[in-house]
Length: 319
Image (cartoon, rainbow, N blue to C red; front, side, top):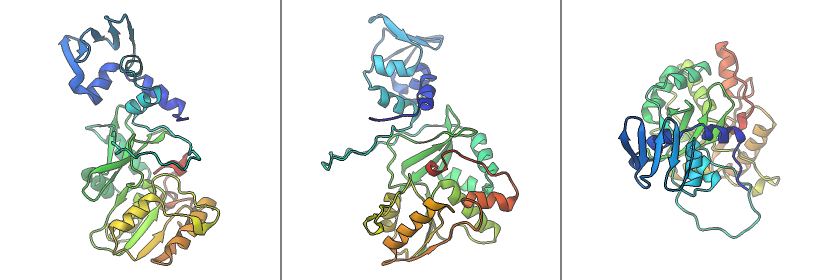
């Protein structure tokens, strides 16, 4: 069964209907006068003072979640996904019958005009201000509304958003935007390079780029790619397949010859590196370079800068 964390459901319940319609369905909202509104589809459904009531049916509610479930007949899990932008997790089934794949529609959270929270958060993790500005301007990072999460966006070669992961500021919240395509994760492509550096998370990628700049190097010289989701190789390494995002990236940049695996300095990262070396070595020159110290490249950057390391409960999900 699909699963959404209770804290995500609680956040979804906090969004009132007026905010939801203004954010996701502005064409459906009709202003009657003052603080009173109705919907274009149901003119007897009135919205006022954070509440809504459907007079022709004799019931109402306090939030957008009730509206989607009771009025629009949207399944509860899908309604939470629409509001929060976080997809439910569905355990894999054993069925070998492939269902017809429907095109994914990425539902990005609304953009905050002011990105102060996101900027300060990234700076607190040691990320260089030039890199942050570059990612904001390129549409690869932004701050969302209404919860002010940092959103890391995965773009395709035509700069179209295809994937997004959300990171809470001051919380352990981590999630993917509904409709995210895992083949497209957060990355910074290079113009003309035959080298690629692979990381477990967007933060590690940006940390490495910051370290390159600090050492006087060009952080845009090589391809920088982070994984989308946890990559778990099979016990028999020869039966393992490439992570979807890496497989897609290598197919789009066939000139890549050198791959450096800059994964976490732990047992899981070591096993992932061993599997990828097994898979890639026939075609590419592969090297394994975990951070010299610390669990990951952000830890290493923080140690070098002398700033506190941010401890996360679910670091392995931060993509």
